[in-house]
Each structure stands twice: as C-alpha cells, then as structure tokens.
Image (cartoon, rainbow, N blue to C red; front, side):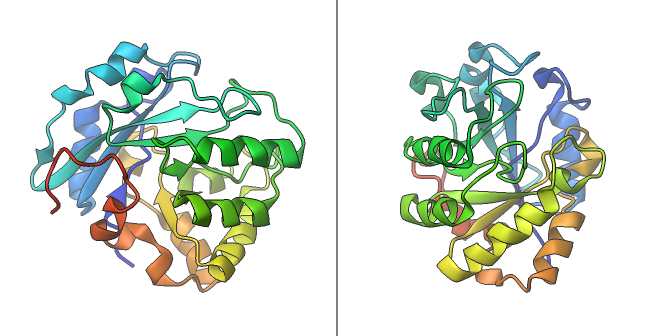
Length: 243
C-alpha cells in the first residue's frame, strides 16, 4: 500500500532528534508523501522547545514541491486528568495536535487511570490523534479506548518506531495487534506515524505495514491512504484549501 501522510515527525528543535525541518521535508518528498507534518514535542519534554516555537510555526511554507506542509505538536499528557503542556492560545494556531503519554512527563497509573487520561485528552477540541497507545508501561483498557476514539472522532496512531527493537516502549507489537483487532470491530480509524527522529525514517512505514497485513486491516480505516480522509479529523483545519 502507498501511504501518503506522515504527521508524526521530529527535528533538531526537539532536543533529541537529528535532522532539520528542511531535511525532513526533502525526505518526505523523496518518499512520495503528499502531506508532511512537523509535530515537535511540547515544552515539558526535556530538551523540548519553548512554547514560542509553536507560535512561530507560521513561518513554515504551506507547500513544498507540491506537498502539503502542516504545523503540529506532540503534546505531553501531564497527569491522569489528561492535561496537556501547551496552552490553548498556542494549539489553536496549529493544524493538529497529537497527545501522548511519555515516561519523562507523567507517571503511569492503573489501566483504568491511564485510559481515563487518554479519553479526557480526546475531549480537548484540538486533539485529533492519540500517539503510540502501545507501551505496556502504560497499561490500557483497549476496548474503552477504541470505543472512545470512535465517539470523539479521534485517530489512534500505529507508531512505526514503537516496533523498533531498540525502542524503550514495551510489548508494543502485541498491544498494537490488540487494538487493531478492536478497531476493526468498532470501525475506528487509525493513522500511521513514523515518529521519525532522523530524516531517513520520514514516510517509512515498514513495520506498521507488516502488522496491518498480518491482521488483515481494512484499507478504508487507514487515513494515510487518502488525504481527503484526514481533513475531517482536523476540526480546526481551515487555513488552506484542500488538495
């Protein structure tokens, strides 16, 4: 399958990635993407940029070599109430927000507490993707999560980097299979993300593609296959006309 969208990427601005935004865009174009998104970690991540960084993303080009460029954020969920670390005045200037749980920002709770935090984050009007809900260090009640994502019209991410054996996340592949099977049952859509921290990984979904084929996941629930499917999830996306 040809995946056309990558919204989960990082640059040197995040403090622990190794490519510039321009290098990422060049590789996105080389890999045939139609939509590239920069989703830098929000300020609570150690080494992350100040909130001013997100207020100035307006300087990025809206198109690059015919490819749509989106300005986003990977916001950190800071507590079990689903609080995010970027203020609304910044998020409303962006094209999208991924909300994720990270060990450096929030201590894991019980499966119910972790799931409640993600569901509360989904209710934030600026959140359109839940990032890497696959880490066993944050146990989750996946049926509740998948049902809520359908209810709140939020995409669940299948994170390609989570399945890298060097990644610190635990039991990611097993958990991804669990929620993909539930997404099939509930007809909940997903978004593949590379979580690229080096430009060569932008737009490469080899591990995610392998898992999707393994579980025979329906193409109509994979938003990356058609940019027109994406716009309906970006509820505050109104700055530019559609492709």
